[in-house]
Length: 160
Image (cartoon, rainbow, N blue to C red; front, side, top):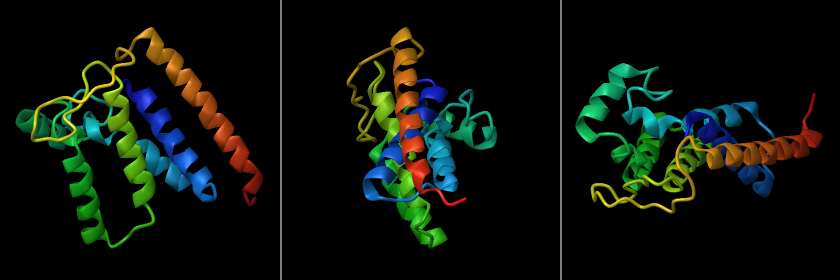
């Protein structure tokens, strides 16, 4: 899945979750969901996020490869536990987790799949489209429309 699709999907997942849970619109939560939707690609030095932190991306890529540990349930659980232990903050964890999970689910919908149960190398995939293909483009447009609808819907509760 392309970075732009990951971001829109992460934002939409968070916005839908917030809508269902009755969580008021918070720009910082949207920002966290959007950024964390790119985090799993930290294992690829040429990815949008990998280019920002090559000093982290290159070693992870060299040790685990792309779509390895960072695309697994192990990384999700380890990340949540580490954040909770070291930060003591919990307010930012739901959008961070949903953004991260949206990336993994998005990559599962591509032909390559993800090693969800790493260190097992079996890839889990429900291939709906090819990364960067025409179908992904149309899916991104549809998801963007849903995101716009969710944000406009929540706009009625904004305090200005």
